[in-house]
Length: 392
Ligand SMILES: [Zn+2]
Image 1 (cartoon, rainbow, N blue to C red):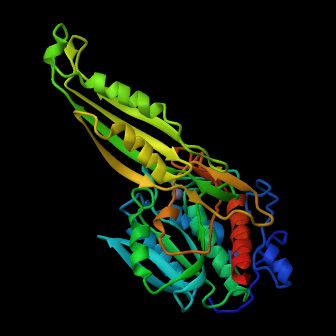
Image 2: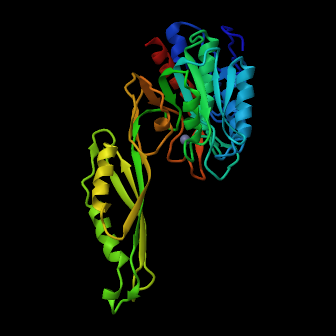
Image 3: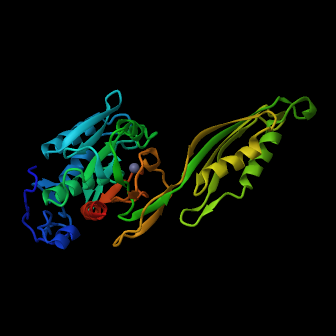
């Protein structure tokens, strides 16, 4: 793309001014939704920059199977698209044939970092369209965000509304497994800094207020088996495990005004072999969704399990709750119950936003979809967030 070039692709339909930024600044919006009179009313709604279609670009990403750990091809397609648009692209190696895509105009450090993920959960589901809905794996989580972020960047740059040093983009691998992509990005950003992070995930075009953290643990009790008629000859794992679980379930866990209660799930319990055998072993898996004060929760749990004879435990994950910036004029907010890459990003940021098209209720499901119009609307949403961040 030529910087500052003004292109307006009208298609063959009726032009509507979508971009609040365009109209506010008085410049020409380079996007128009196209009203298709033959098909569904908004079936042809699209966003165009430099004769590239948002819907086509989104399709090109979804067409590629990029289940976590197999993101090579989608990273390469993204890289060449961004390079063709005149952007600088750096690949950050995360593993064998696994790369994050980091892109900017000339200077890696920027006021705003737009970021999302290019891996998906399994299984792969091919792209299909039904009316205004676009189905397929990753349509919503998170290739809808990726495509809209890229088009937002290009649209603002194209109109001269952002310049070098204003916005960089980072598309990571591995978000759906362990966040290894984002963790590698942190290491690569030693000399790179950002002020505002805009994280793309399905939020129904609302600003995420935050999301709960996680505490995962397994508890193991090793007793001694005996005939149930002679319990004094054994050590009952159930008689140790059950009271401990009861104590944990009775904990008065912290509450947060925005994120709500901290909740515990005893998700898996496995004790003994038969009714007439004193059980030799017991294990339990517990997850706690933390809305406030992770250290306090860890302390409360430890108090109940530390020092219990025959009991060992392992804390498998502790992720603190995330509180985001969500007060921006013109945006609704939403409380989220899912985890994201936000806590994996360790560089300091003055503001963090979570925003994107599509709903988490269909992400990861076999009916994953995004509304075509939401992809277009998300470009406008990102435009607003970027302009808000760049001017401040
Ligand atoms: Zn996601």
